[in-house]
Image (cartoon, rainbow, N blue to C red; front, side):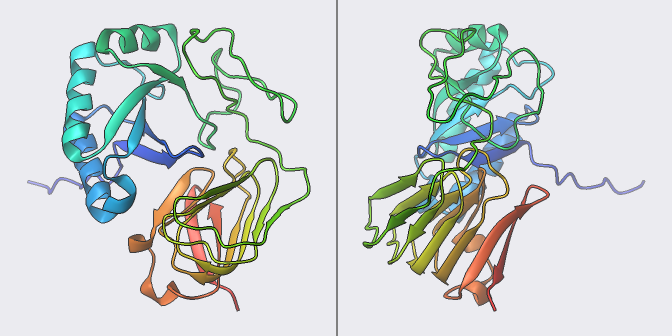
Length: 261
């Protein structure tokens, strides 16, 4: 009998949002597989993912699971170490499902994997700085644009160290930090991030969905780096790059990190 080809396709794709909430886009509704993948993420980086808030996005499934199955997934994800806090808004059927399982709805945060020219749930781009209201969404859903944010304003320069627990966000522009980003600190930009010191906390570039953003830092020790929601944690990055000056970019939905010459 021929050996079964191993299945390396993940059941769920985890993206990091710009407000500290992870978005779990379910690509295949397999409770066992999703639970195992999440448990592995928590074990790999417990400081980042243990008891992390997670939005479950079922919008990519061709057929929605029933309420009992979603409730089972909710409980199993909690057992794996994260806390599902909502279901991502998508269709009226998802709204009904969320009501049945007792979870609130949150609109999908901006991310690069959203389908271009998607169906009727797609939201048109709006002028920068304007708030977005999806008229088809329920009143209690938090609406955000899913169109990638364009970067056009002058860069934001932050001169002081970014300390643990502090967050610096450059909306619609690049972020330049002229000091150290400490462990537990977070730097976020809709554009690129330049750090002229040690990066020990988190850096999230292209937070509005701009996949061409890059991260540059003089001394790399980051807990987590992400571009347009695609992330890596320090444990996944070759030790040869630790402490080095690096640049980070996104290509073919894969995060690349290399030393600067």
